[in-house]
Length: 379
Ligand code: SF4
Ligand code: SF4
Ligand code: SF4
Image (cartoon, rainbow, N blue to C red; front, side):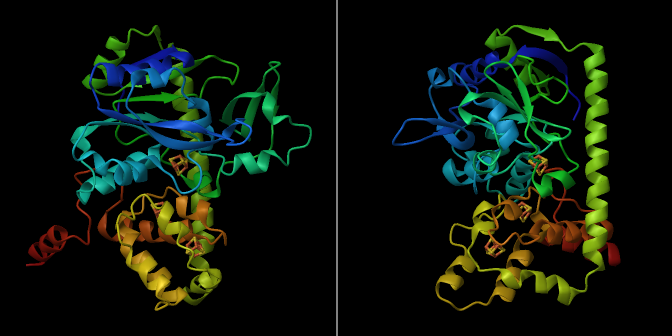
């Protein structure tokens, strides 16, 4: 996707873009983000972000943008899943969604099976290196760090970087999720606009804004935010940084999958023996869309074993897996679920030239249409 325009804007102006989306009736509702608030003390936990449906422009006085980019939505939440479950896939109303690259891939897969109406979406994407999961829990273990003093976050080459209220910067040794370190698709597949902090230092109060559609350009114009064209040197740097991140991720992915593929089928299945059938991988998967999950039902009725549970889940979602890693991130047993799916995805690409989450026009190779086409080609 090539950007029509690229700007630098103030981070504090980002909520104005969201408010304009509602004010100017681009959308009826926006899937926004909110920070967790402790019920007893009222203290804000800036490291735990959840999706929230926003209908009033005034509710966007602020927006936890750097938190969302660095930590993602906590637990099983993803923007794609929330879009499907909480607003019926935008089938009946126009929805704004703030989406990671893997969310945009999930949206494409859900649209292919008519669970989402992409015509009703305004997508605000972002470019990301990956997310630091369980940050609220892990940061408590960092010696000498007062969490109440953190004012900003960013993921850099060596993991999470924090800015404290006295202006000091601290690298805290927390890396991105294992799956994110293998993810080489760091830019949205579909978006009207996107934001990125990749080439800006943590103490910058700006963010890069890219415009991808006429609708996006119209929004930026109507929001009346101050913007300046992205300088050429930053454009070049942005392309270099994205290439370097992609190359590093691809190298890790190749190495991890080579090791995984050396295992026999029995050894791979052995890895899943620790599965407790807790359903967290299903609840977190953006492309698991059934309202009444047959596996959850069978598990409840105690009429399925862990091998059948895993194999059925793999058979159900394998050709839709967009490699978001949310199954890995939520598995209490830390099972290598995304490796299994990525290995299968590579085989599908090799055998059928098919890659999930790339384009709405790609026909899933297991669909009736694809099978008829293959039969026609044979004859
Ligand atoms: S899987 Fe890729 S796109 Fe998704 S959060 Fe991780 S790095 Fe970003
Ligand atoms: S199977 Fe796992 S990696 Fe694939 S889309 Fe679902 S949660 Fe994401
Ligand atoms: S999250 Fe892990 S333990 Fe739970 S059902 Fe999925 S694979 Fe099994």
